[in-house]
Image: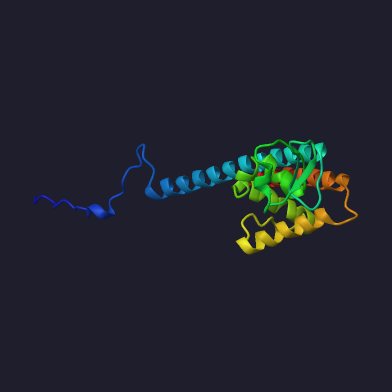
Length: 191
């Protein structure tokens, strides 16, 4: 009787046992899932921050509302002064006594130094969307710079309309807070 030769299976076709370590595509899928969770958590945190910022802006407008300027303050003689973006340096470090819609959001976000910060810019985006968009349309969080500037001009014009009242500005800011809450619910609902 002659011995039978052993059949050898090439190494590349042998089944590898899955002991403790998932396959590379399983690891990649898990990495993508975790990265998505991180993005979602960051977005939720940002939305909560925006909602708090808009609530603080509402408090600023509640203490004093301004038209045709960003902020109001009292000078050394106790005179009420209004400043625009161009004359902001005149205010110095004096406390504000009032703000327009845009100025209140800027102040709530950290003051004029924070005007270009992401939370302030996104709060302005949500404010514009609440005023001019539809709740069924997605918010455009990163419009092109010229579009964002046009949105800020729209908000400024809305604030400065002669018949506008502080109650309407407060109502808009309250609606923006609700819109932020809806965005939080929407972002939290997606796994």
